[in-house]
Amino acid sequence: MKLTSHRPLVALPRPQHATSFEQTVPAEAPASATAAAPAALKVAFMFALVSLTLLERFGVQVTASYSLNPALLALYGLVLVMVATRAAHLNGSGALMYVGVMAVAALSFIVNLSLDSRQYASLSSLGLLLLLYAPFTVALTPAVGTPAFWRWLMKWYIAFAVALGVAGIVQFYAQFVFRAPWLFDFTPLIPAALRSSGTYNTTNAVGSLIKSNGFFMKEASGFSFYMAFALLCEWSTRRRKLPMAVMAFGIVVSYSGSGLLALGVALLFPLGQRTLVRVSACLVAGALVVMLFGESLNLSYTFGRIGEFESTSSSAYCRFIAPGKLVAEQIDSDPWTVLVGHGPGTTQKLSTVCETTYGKVLFEYGLFGAIAFTALIVAAVNRSAAPVRVRVALVVQWFLLGGFLLGPEAVLAIYVIAGIWPAGVCRDAFAPLAAAPPRRRGAFERVDPEWMKTS
Image (tube, rainbow, N blue to C red):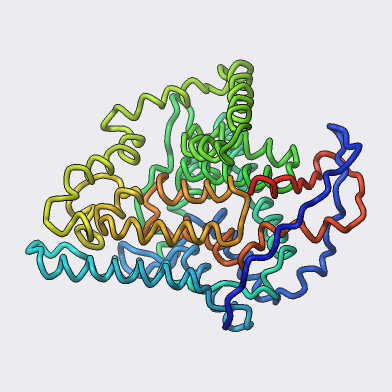
């Protein structure tokens, strides 16, 4: 096994004589450019993409209260196929960060098992944690993890996201025709042995209407984020108007702030002189949408949710305020908890707050844990030099938008989009196109290499 080094950034010429309706772009690489990737590996990637978009409600039941999510199966399916096809090599930085996480988690467990008389630390939680993050020690070899292969992945991810967005929009408007229970929650129709475990706010009302959850997703908030994330991916690569319109409208009918929060933070990057202009343009566009469609789409509900941060019974308070309040009040309850926390799996045993990642990490693993996990995730999202806004959105989801410390969906998204690739491969994704002769095509097919300048 060998470690890869960063590859130089290749500057791309800006297309000339392009109009706002028709863009001149480099010709795309031929389909044979991905021939280095084994067919089995492509199948494993496709299963990972389906797991992130269409299979969230499914799972393989292990106990009465726990099931293996497709995302976890896809995560290890990728690793096994990479090893079997000799497409895997050791990710040195990822392995180092993982050892740090493993050491802190084990120390937290041992210290609390030895010194805390309540014995709340959970061995199963520790085991799941170490299992979930172990794949970050493995990456694709440079011969297989090529820029062309990453472009192939992004093309299919956005295709699945568009399908999810269409399903969510159709679901939202179908409720005006009929109110079948399965329209917003078909989970009871899934056999118990293949049903995802957990309790979710799947059918969530907005006055007389129900928020769209994308039909396939567990909650409207998850649908909202994945629409926002796919929108950022499309904006950072090809900028086709129709897919972006579908995903933007998916955010609207979700009536959730998760996607808007991810977009708002991501659009601040890259920080610079154009940040204010970019954010102002988005605010103006949003204001126009509210003015034109606010009443018909009941958008006042979405903006009215800002006040939920002050309500102790709201999901916003539960996810963003309560975990921080718990940490502030309990982080120093014992002499050792500031540094190593209260131990794995103790958040719900000692409190009823949502297990949002930032609160769970600090409460269960202390400052040492926060440093170790942050280093692992930041190294993973930055490894491949993916577009900066895509990286920011991945971190926002894992860190702030839910209980994703032990959530395989967020970890799989980080691994598939960024962590699995050789160093710098996303930065180089359009470099091979620079030498190709330009051709003209419609704005719906635009390929935009400009994101490399902001990565």
